[in-house]
Length: 443
Ligand code: HEC
Ligand code: HEC
Image (cartoon, rainbow, N blue to C red; front, top):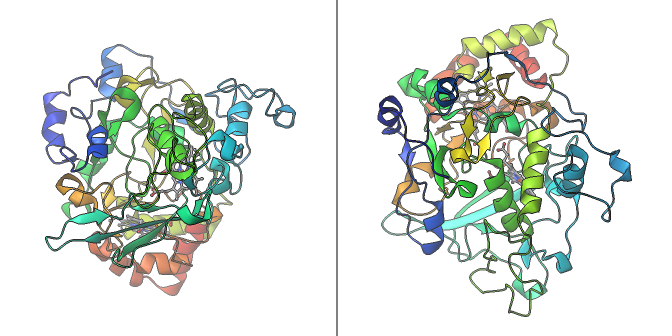
């Protein structure tokens, strides 16, 4: 399905957005978003959808559904033999935790055996300490080149001679640490126009970049990216299919081609891969997406007087300009994801507190690796999505590379677009700084 035509107003605004077209290699053709991101929320209003009942999104780290899917049979009664994909939260959680082996198509190059291996803290779907490795290099003309086989260096393989190793010349290098996925269904349900309105209200000095990316299950219809450190995906189904291939080596209809090992083919037909592609028919991908769509948003820790004082200071010095405290999701009935999904009651008209604008910023931490090589994505080389701060208290390795050990170090790395804010933060008294840190520890 194609996205509906944007109104004149949105088309005018999107002139300022980065839209990817013509990226160099063949693989990238599918990653070219088609059309302009649709006006999503206004669409629902025009169809006369629902009187607005707006409520806070349910929160908790408790393995229970937000209502998107039913809870299902008791989790400890589900087994490999009786699991039914898509039946319930518990079934889909079982699949998200399911460990893949060679006979399922694992690898041949991969990073881990299950989604939950990297998304588990403190419950399935959370973050973890596992970091991925990305590399490439810059040529004489300043363009970015991915390492042979792609910028993602797989850390594991099913045979010793095909483990990917980094070429010495590939000196643009970074880690990207596993993010939280709890509450992601609410993020998916944020209308394009809501993200653009946040951006348009930002003062020029901190204004973020909205990035149009393709929704793969909607024939690459353009939508504003909001997932991943680089805002590289707009839908959970696209992200899940990407992760199934790139983290676990399982091909699906949306990502049918096996990865190479540093350029060497290792897929079906070679001695390394016993399973024909696609290795999964796509059902698992929807199960993973539906599991994440059913998770509650992260809950807050105790709200003390210092926490409340710290939050006002957080706003006062300007942190909230990017780490936006409150966003409303689109109304139930709104068509999102290029027409591939309708916002359900469980996710629509919900107030969430993600502490992010879901825009990309250059705060001086850019890792040098664009979403994809080529001039159209060159703008993303040094931008990173404003990290959502919900669930921050469950993480102890901070920033995209996981290399900031403390909140103080993470704040100190904020320069570029965040310079003025960092200067104002540094000018706070020690007591005030402690209050900001107490606030961060409550998230
Ligand atoms: C080896 C570890 C690893 C495995 C396995 C893994 N992920 Fe991830 N996941 C990550 C990392 C690292 C990121 C951030 C990557 C980036 O943005 O560059 C991420 C990001 C995500 C995001 C974006 C969340 C957000 O709000 O930005 C989603 C969704 C996701 N993963 C889903 C999945 C699913 C579904 C699976 C299983 C098919 C999976 N992941 C398997 C490491 C992993
Ligand atoms: C101009 C936008 C902007 C402003 C202003 C800003 N941030 Fe950030 N923040 C970001 C971005 C972008 C990242 C992710 C950077 C990275 O990973 O390299 C981030 C990351 C963080 C992280 C790490 C989160 C994690 O999950 O690893 C913390 C903590 C944080 N910011 C706190 C603050 C505080 C406190 C302030 C105010 C003093 C602030 N930020 C102001 C954009 C901003």
